[in-house]
Every structure is written in structure tokens, then in C-alpha cells.
Amino acid sequence: SPVRLTLADIERIAPLAEGALPYNLAELQRQHSPGLGRPIWLQIAESAYRFTLGSVAGAVGATAVYPIDLVKTRMQNQRGTGSVVGELMYKNSFDCFKKVLRYEGFFGLYRGLIPQLIGVAPEKAIKLTVNDFVRDKFTRRDGSVPLPAEILAGGCAGGSQVIFTNPLEIVKIRLQVAGEITTGPRVSALNVLRDLGIFGLYKGAKACFLRDIPFSAIYFPVYAHCKLLLADENGHVGGLNLLAAGAVAGVPAASLVTPADVIKTRLQVAARAGQTTYSGVIDCFRKILREEGPSAFWKGAAARVFRSSPQFGVTLVTYELLQRWFYIDFGGLKPSGSEPTPKSRIADLPPANPDHIGGYRLATATFAGIENKFGLYLPKFKSPGVAVVQPKAAVAAAQ
Image 1 (tube, rainbow, N blue to C red):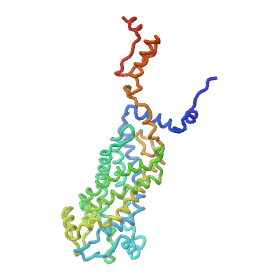
Image 2: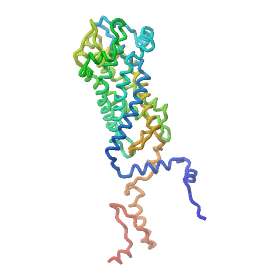
Image 3: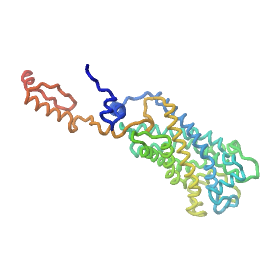
């Protein structure tokens, strides 16, 4: 009886490629199949799905690092000169953390968390959704994304979130600094909303754009490349490596935009008696530089890095794991690193170009020589732009 080779036999014959063949075939089919457009409703459904998962991931990440965010805000709002209230209240971030815990209790570290969670869900959701959407549009057939497109996707994601970020930030910041003064009426989110009004919620929006667009333009490309570096030999990225990639990417992104974050905080905090007031981004920049020196622009940088790195690490690992655990196939691209995809195998396969060495042109010449020498009749290998060799006998018969 005839003996047939199975996939298991092929894997035993080629142990170095064990398990890679199915992925090779699927990837090759995806790369060389014509791009089939998806209906608009399916793309909208995919964005809504990502938005929902991004909301959950954003809430988890924000809660995990909120005490660090509170310390960062109070350090940035502490004035070096020209201030009566709050001057030298905290020596450093660690001193701030200890004093908040001592005088305001454990829950003082979570002052303003509720409005933060209400706002962070759509904020992080729209950021992650827009970044994925733009990246998908520029993704090549081999799954890679050009670096300029990665930066563009991150910048678009950062800009799109400001509509949610600015109101969220201004309410959160005013609640966070309210605990510094123990006398007076208790400040609530409703009090802040009533005092600011609709347009007041967007105070400092220019500085928010200056912070969020560069942050995301740096963060998401660095995160994507860290994932590639931390992937295993099969291209899979585990949960701990996702967390590490998110945390590492947050270091340069958070630190480099700290000056814009300081300006935004000063513009959004309600100045107390004796404190310097600012009329805008440029005015704030000049007064801080003149009164406190260049180092003031880096206040709270350490707290910002320690807050942003783990926050985005937790947010991104939650977002990607949720996509794996609750995966829905919308006909689009899966998150990179979500499944084993041997990268080196596809490059080893011969290209589809008929002109490559060993392709149809070389085969045509070889077959023509065999036919001339031995008089064999071989099947015709037809390909666009490739001449078909006709045997002499067939040409004579046609004439």
C-alpha cells in the first residue's frame, strides 16, 4: 500500500522547523492574498470592542499607580519662590508620600480617584483605539509598520485623548492639592465643576496637547520595538514581557515631556493667596524660568516616571491580555506577539517574483535545452511577462 507523509513526519525530518510549517503556510497565504476590504460596520464593531477593553485596562492601570500620581502633582505645584502657602512643604517625593500618609491617612493617597476613573476609561480607551486604528492602516504585508507611521499613530492617539484628558486632569489636580490645606470647606468634584464651568474644564488645554502628543509619539513606537526585542524565538510575547515593555517605554516618554506637564499643572491649579498666577503657556514658562530657574521644569520628574512607567505597563498588559482572553475575530490583525509566529521562516521561503534566480525564466531555458536535446514534451509554465517556450515540432505544425 502507498505510504503517505504526514505533518508529523515532516517535523521529524526537519526538527529545526518543528511546528513552524502551519504558521508559515498561513502567513504566506495572508501576505500574498489580495487585500479584501472589510465592511464599515465591521471596522466600527472592532473599534468599539477595542474601546471597551481599553476602558477596563485604563481603569486598572490608573488605580494601581494613583498614589504616585498624587505625589507627583503636589511636588509640581510646590512653588519655590513668590509663594506663601505650600513653600517648602515637601523636601522630596518620598517626604511628600510620608506626610500625606501621616496627616491625611491611607485614603488621602486616593483623593480624587473617582473622577479619575470616570475620565480615564474613555481617555485611555480612545488613545489605545486610535493608535491601533492608525497602525493598522499603515501595516505592511509582513506585519511591520514604518517608524514614521508609528510616530504618527502615537501622535494622533495623544491628540485625540485631550478632549477627555483636560477636564479629567483639572478636576483631579484640584482635588489632589486640596488636602494640603486642612482648614476651610471640604472640596469635592462637584464644587470644582461648579466653579470652573464647561469652558473652565479646558483651561491649560494647550499645555495638555504639548504633553500628550509627544508622550504618545514616543511611547507607542518604543513599546512596539521593546515587544519585538522581548519576543521569544517563535515571536510570542508573554505577560511579564508585555509589562516590562510597557514600563521601559514609559521612561523616556514620561521624562522628556515633564516640562510641559509642570506648565499644565501650574495653569490648572487654583492659585492661592500670595502665589504667582499665569495667563497662558508662554507666560507660565517665562515666570517659572525667571522666578525658580530651569530646574523647576523638572519638578516631580522622578514621580512622573515612577507613575507613568508602571501605569502604562499595567494598562498595556491588561489591554493586550484582554484581547487574547476575549478574542473576537473581526477579520483584522491580531495584536503582535499574541500567538507564535516564527519570523525567520517566511524570509527563508522563495519569493513569488518569477524573475528571481531559480524561477520561471531559468526553468524555461532549462526545459528548452532538454527539449532540444532529448525531444521531450514538457508542460508549459505560464506566468505574466514570461515567454513560453514552444517545441520546434509544435511551431512547425502550427505553421
